[in-house]
Each structure stands twice: as C-alpha cells, then as structure tokens.
Image 1: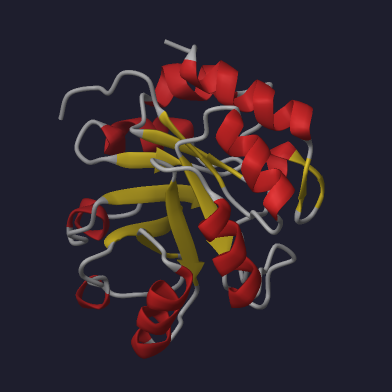
Image 2: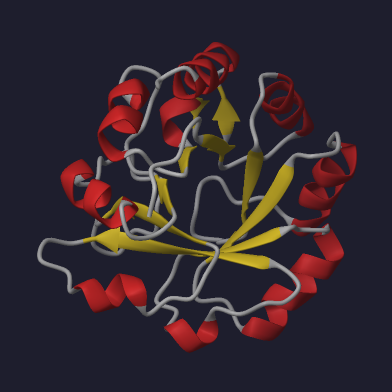
Length: 209
C-alpha cells in the first residue's frame, strides 16, 4: 500500500463544546467521543449529541466503544449522530460491521503478533495503540513505531499511543500513517484539553512531511 501524504488528525476524549470548537477551528479532521464508562474521558450521550450538533460540516465524529453490545452501539450511533464507530475492546472480526457507519478497530500492539491478526479485520482503518494490561487506550504509553510502520505498508493505519506535540513529527515521518490520534497528550487534565497543545499537535502533524 502506498504511503499517505498529510495525515488526518483525530482529537479523542472530547467532553465539552469548547474543546470541540477549538479543535475543529485548528483543523482537526475528526473528534472522538468515549462511551466507555471506565474512562476518565467518558462523555454521556446527551452531551455528545449536543457537541456533535454544534460542529461545523466536514468534521468526522467517532464514537469509541469497549466490548459494548451491538444493539447499544447502534442505538448510540443513531442518537448521537456518529459517523464512525471505533471498537477498542476484544471484538472479533465478525463483530466489526455497523453499516452505514465506517468502523475503526483498535489493536493494542504486543510483540510478535501474527500478521493474520491485522489482516483478518475488514474495517476502514486499524488504530494501533500501546498494550497496557487491563487498559483500553488513553494510557499515554507509546506503541512500537517500527512495528506500526510495517503494518502501515499493508493496511490503513491510524497511529495512537503516547503521541504529543513533541513527538508527533517523528512519529509521522517514521510510521507514515493514514492518521494520528491523540488524547492524553494534549490535555491539562483527563477530559480537559489544553488549547495550545491541541493547536500545536494539529499543526505539527500536518506539516511533518
């Protein structure tokens, strides 16, 4: 698969309208909403719906779910107006279809993972994150970029895991991903974004190549 040019940027863990407006104004391509109750960035459906209704056109909205029943995911997609479903749990390949939504499957990279693990998912993109036992993203831990770069030559990859304004340029140059995803790396505290970090991350990611 050919290397991509300017990476798409997803700001995840959005919990309020102010952060959503700022990220959009800075050029974020997508915003992520965490519907996993165990996360400090959890947003309730009513708030997510309000934020999404406030967004300008052409900003993709992504709902993050962890081992959620399919019926519940479909309900949330319709209620909130989500464009894309991100599955961040232990979902099998045959559990990754939610038409008409596109699906992103998150995989937490371990050493020596079989290639079949990646190729078995027929999804819009794979989001590659760091493996931390019993944690489903938002850990601030960096994944293996060398491993991610290899996968990115074969499939559409969104790179996550420990990204921040200081390392995103090198990450993009080394991995050449379709997109980058950041949450804790642009926060003041869990669930509250730092405006300067958000602006810096987006600018640096898009100018890395």
